[in-house]
Amino acid sequence: MDSHSHAVLRFVLLEDDAADAELIQTQLSSDGSRVEWQHVLTERDFRAALEQGPPDLVLADYTLPGFDGLTALRVLRERWPDVPFVFVSGSLGEERAIDAMKRGATDYVLKERLQRLPAVVQRALAETQERRERHRAELALEEQRVLLSTLIENLPDVVYTIDRDERITIVNRALLELVRKPRASVLGKKLTEFHDLAEVNEDGETLDATLMRNGRSQTDRERAVLGKNDSLRWWYTSKIPLKDQSSGAVIGLVCTSRDTTARRELEQEILEISNREQRRLGSDLHDGLGQELTGLSLLLKGLEVQIARETPKYLPQLSKITELLAHTIQSTRSLARGLAPVNLERGGGLPEALRHLAARCTDMYSLACRFEDRTARLPELDEGSATHLYRIAQEATTNAARYARAKHIVVELRTSPRKLQLSIADDGIGLSAGLAQGKPGLGLKIMEYRAHMMGGSVNFEEPGVGTRVVFSCPLSLLRDRNQERRTA
Image 1 (cartoon, rainbow, N blue to C red):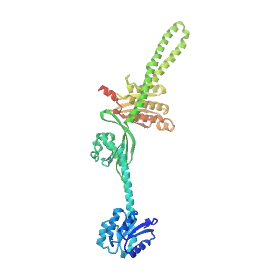
Image 2 (cartoon, one colour):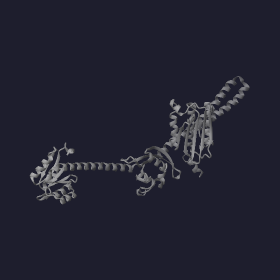
Image 3 (cartoon, rainbow, N blue to C red):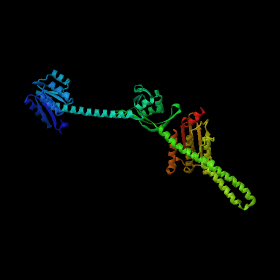
Image 4 (cartoon, helix red, strand yellow):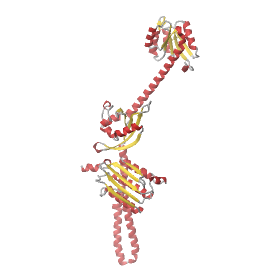
């Protein structure tokens, strides 16, 4: 009874023979265990002993006057079902012993073989302790299971698991609301059988199979999905391999997807407010201040003719004023163009804006910067997306000229039937060398953010000489859907 050697054990002994009771107690005290004995003779005393709380062990004779061991066993099981019960009897035959074990007895010992009693009691106590610990563990696991299932079921995120055959094994309420199906119609099916869920998992079965093969997690991935009615929805997705605890083998994936469309729309609206204000300022500069300065320039030209005729000695000063005014007009136009670089309403759009950007880069930094338009048929772009694309090109050309010490820059806009690609290649010192000198850093993050806002990606490549910045995005995410609806 090692596991109980430091605790006082309470044993209830149901025995009508005082000499046998003493022998039993003596036999069990030989191993030094601390036992508190309750020796009872009648059913009433036995029930009273059980009312004091669960004993650690009950030992009982099989045959008693006015009471018997089987009845005692039934009474114990009704009150304390997990307390070990050992028969100690001289009249317990094999058939009765088997019957007693079937009724719930833990073990039995014949009185003529009391030397077996310590080992039987120790085993009974150990098994009971192990059973109780297992029961507590099962209860704890059940509590965790209920907590986890309640949490998963009520999460606003779409949560599901798939097995190695890529069939759905667990779903929560958010997923059922998304696919508008009852749970029984979803479990055991593949993702591709549900259109809305296939959109959320647009990367498809190839990625899932890869994750299950290499056992790595894929988290923090947000992307845009063009859904029903040409509506754009954003999903933030995580996929974690589910592993078998014993073997460590991947047996499936735990997938969560959060609809971030509302947050994205709010971010886009905030950016659009800023863009609208910039466009308004650019328009005011161009059409307001710019026109007034142009009018002033015309007045000065008329004044210049008159002064040349009447007082020519003031012509040099007037020429300087005229030249300064011309520079002011040019600066105003450049400032207006910078505030609204892509003017879709006045024609030209993004290609024209990129062409002007290349020309200004050539003039400003005294290098060769050219724009190559390789768009087969560029659709109407959303103005916000067009501005993002322009700013990416602007940041990349500025980095190439200022930090990479490039001599040549090529800005290329290319489209395929489904994708738009913008690349800015230079022959400078390279991105790694520039970063090693502590040069550009925030600009790269801003480019990545702008690409992310459009649902695309931007890569920074070093093809041997210089740097190549490549942005790519599905055309469907860049189209001006308002313009398409107006045309329709």
